[in-house]
Image (cartoon, rainbow, N blue to C red; front, side):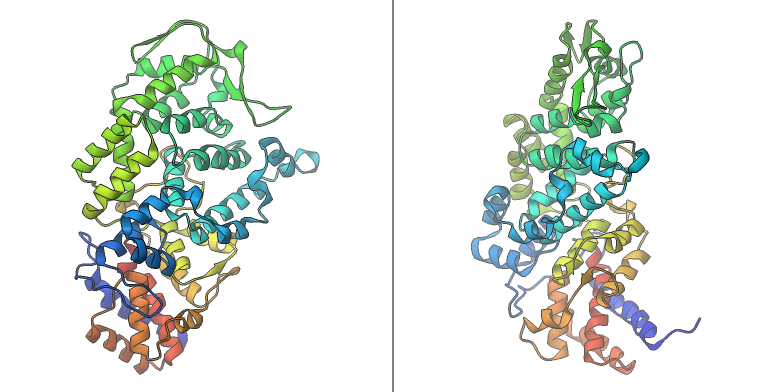
Amino acid sequence: MTLSRRDILKLSALVATSAALASCSRLERPITRTLAPVKVAAWSPLSEADYLALSRLTYGARPEERSRVAEIGLANWIEEQLAPETITDNASAFRLRNLSTLGMSASDLYDISDQIFENVDRRKVPRELKKAALLRQTYSRRQLFESVVEFWSDHFNITTEKNDCFYLKTVDDRDVIRKHALGSFRDLVQASAHSPAMLTYLDNQANTKGAPNENYARELMELHTLGVEGGYTQTDVMELARCLTGWGVKKNFWRGDFKFFEKRHDTGVKHVLGLELQNAGQAEAERVIDLLADHPSTARFIAVKLSRRFLSDLPPAEVVDKAAAAFTRSRGDIRSVLRVILLDGLPFAGPKYKRPVNFVVSALRLLNAETDGDNPIQDYLMQMGQSYFLWPTPDGYPDGVQAWQGNLMPRWQFAFALLNNEIKGTRINLQKLIGATGLQSLPEIVDALTSLLIGAPLPESERDALISNLKSAGANEDESTAIITAGILSSPAFQWR
């Protein structure tokens, strides 16, 4: 195969930029040197701590987030983000305006998927849901809210590939995850338990008296509340499954709505975690779910998972303890728990490797991309292994570095395709972005780009050597800028946040 001059430039940039940035990244800490405040024209100055915090709490800290933190301080910015209802979000709403399925009922979603002769199109509805997820993460000013939504989407994972979940997940996303993401955990887990998408995904529609199905009961305890070491027994799972008999989904009129089928319910006495339940129909399982939501094991399990997502793969024990105590004290108020984790824990946060969604969206945000969020860019997430709402098992997409660090080639391919505007429906204007800084010389521009994308400029000697190598290869200034930017996106430093 013959490589073109452009291909050679791409490869040399990838090698050179990754080598130059290698000193900025190691497993223990993604940026090892002390970061001076970033002072680049339109981009507000940030301390190292504030930059790293914003990188953790957003899908890429754009100039407006930097400016707001510089103006009011990180703690006040976190409080603003914990009240997303007070933040106008017109840019996100504008881009969602034509996604009509997001607000539809389950029966209407099924109807628009139902083609002639009962041939169901399983692609139309989930396609809009995936687009909405990417567009919200990219353009919403409610960045912390979208991060928490992603967390709960993993915690209460449902794949659109199973049975009727292809249309039911849209309702679950709207009425369960997004509605309760920063509210009461009790309300969230109750809403999930009544969600037709969840009941379908975990087979509870097949849970009837005389033939109990334990799948949902087990995951409700193991993954949604207590945790695998939370103190429940196999008998508790079996008894909870009996409580959940008859919980199902309508199939005809009002298709896709929750329904309690009384005739399918096991009316015998049950014992779950020491609680005796007489014949109370639907209320039996609801009482158990309230018990699970208030359980000390649930408080610790949720505190650990939230701390792992927002702080580090091995979160500080003292922060987890405080977060669990806040969960118990507030009876599961998610804002109260997050407030402890973020305000007390961020100074001790360790590195987090970017999952594919965070990698792609941070590149889009920081380079001020315009995207329609449709299949061409979704295909890159598929190649990287994190397509929205497609993880097949109930545990949700993995959170730790080991799950993602070995699949770098699709990231490199995405970086160069993005910089070359080769992704249909997605465009960047690098020259316009640079023009906003008012900078003229290539060294200054490179400093600005590295400050924007990884929080600090390269050491001067490494920056100058990188520019010199590209000039030697025949790249002009615009080519050098684009290649260096793609190289930064492909570098070790940009893979961490």
